[in-house]
Image (cartoon, rainbow, N blue to C red; front, side, top):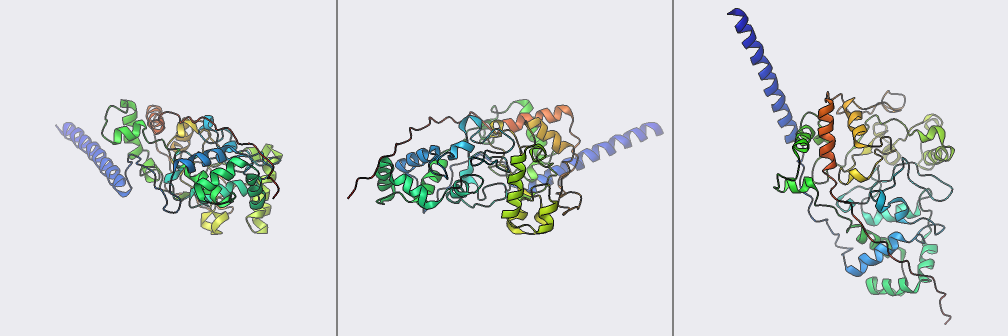
Length: 383
């Protein structure tokens, strides 16, 4: 009888722990915006959409003449068949350089309030010139790019139709590119359909993965809302880019970025990793922190993380399950900034498979766009 009571007491204790864990998970979910279907993108009042503007922006997106030496277009680092990103750990750079970070997809960026890994652009209109004029990316000069466009009759006609100017202005080019990028929307994924009420849109495995996402795995803490990002900044312990150890050109770019963005001399000599948000704020507790990336369209955008450390979603889940990793900013060498949210999850192999299956449901079908025909140069007629 005593043994039975002990067994019943133990069972009750286990049940209580299970209920308590469920309550904690429910409480955690309540702290964060829930996942939601993705609606239509916001359109700024000072850059309204029109068919003519979008078509012009599409052509400019593909045109390498909007850059330094007319070799590097937006599409060079945001290729449609690579998730509208670039399928290598570090993105392409201006000829003779390599970029120092992974190229993010432009799909659904219309919904974001902070662009780039460290949030250095607040809109698509500001993102475009940052890429085209950056010393590592585009290296373009305003007057040179405007002059090139002025020698293209079709651009003179299109810019006058859309913006009313006699000759193309570079600020209007950025506005047109932004308008085109606001059409690169994927909002009919299995996750969208399920959250909108179609309970057949996700498989049993994916539904189990969603429960883990919202509960045991804790993904919802940072990947929440319609875009599955809180747009906040974290150090996850992602290891430094391997290419900095073996690729001399990548190392040169990294050292240049440290110098150009104004780190201290001591940091310039010692740093072997990307300081992330610190580049912008110069706050020590921002070292090694990067913006939470959206989870949408990620089935097509490998590799992952700011330096392309992981080549598939299973690797990413395994990284989180292990409690993240170590970098220059986790052990206090420069600053101990690793997020307290990153801790071992205790997921089984089956649970990790379920979570990966759910993450894949954020992507839907690939977005295909036929590339435009670029208009040719023509000398201006003399007056």
